[in-house]
Image (cartoon, rainbow, N blue to C red; front, side, top):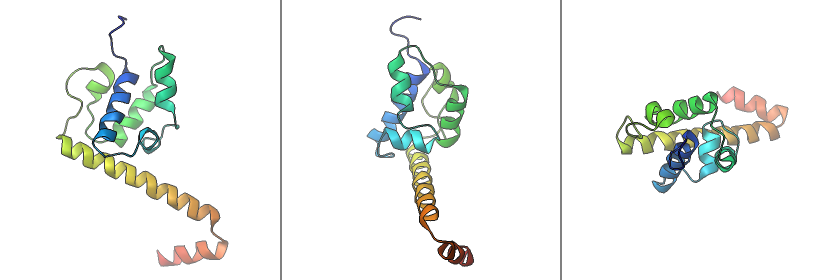
Length: 124
């Protein structure tokens, strides 16, 4: 590998930063957690200089952020997206919103009493 060759983790970092720069995501943590990755996953792997993301991590990113080009993500070939940029932004915002809702629900359920949980279920 040459010194200038971009790794998949470099492209993942570039993708996340693109979303952040376009106000689709609030930060790297939102990108990572929305995709089901651990917080600081990208930073830690990027800093190793030798590591590459797992197939599972790439699959999570691809499934979460609809419209990302798998060919670009894995091989660095072609365009970053298979959809128009405005659609990619919308898709990322939806993924982030789902992550936020799930987090709120987990906190609510974790802190709710049995009676409160029963009342929530009855409303559904």
